[in-house]
Image (cartoon, rainbow, N blue to C red; front, side, top):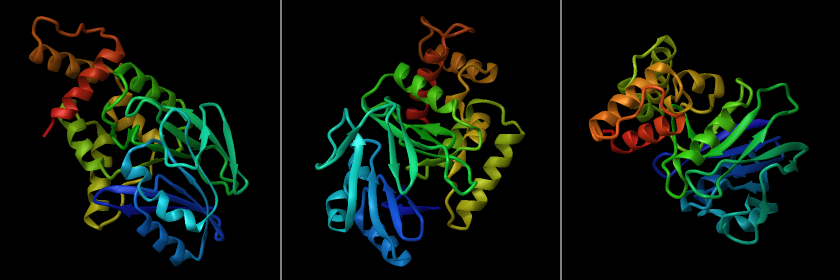
Length: 267
């Protein structure tokens, strides 16, 4: 199996997994780059996986249907272009001989799901297609869900194996890393990762996929109980609302909510 990131729009990635004959495509917001990739590799489009309903993730489905020899699979609790097989958390899909687990990750949208491939049958690391829930060094905005939902979703993903390849849907890494550097002292892992990501982007290369082990070291949204992160969130909350500051031992959800709002306003 080969994993390919297909650039789309200004900063989207459409992910493709193929065996040299058939391909699975994840979140095709734009059909044109997918069609080009299929032609370049002489592949059939065997299936489409969708994590959530936003246009930059589903906009290309209609123009890909004439090439599709399989089905579209998407979240049961969201409106996905039909026909689409609705899937629920806990279900497993077998495609190209591979078993994809469906994980419920609401927060960015109310019915957002992720697809996890534990065994690639080729000795390579697991793969997580997480849409706009988890980004490298960041997470998605809360358009429909609550801080509690998103925090729970991220913690659910954090329990996956550390070598999991994290296939996010946007190239937001450098922006997220600037925020991570601004809110807490940069340790060696963060410093190394910033340097590597800057070098990748300077060469026009993606920073993705990341790994879950890396994210657990550099992503503040996965570290809401760590003293440096809690202290930064507490200071930020005190500045914004002196009458209702966060306690030093604040609930991780409150820390997460403060960080997420801070990131929304960060420039």
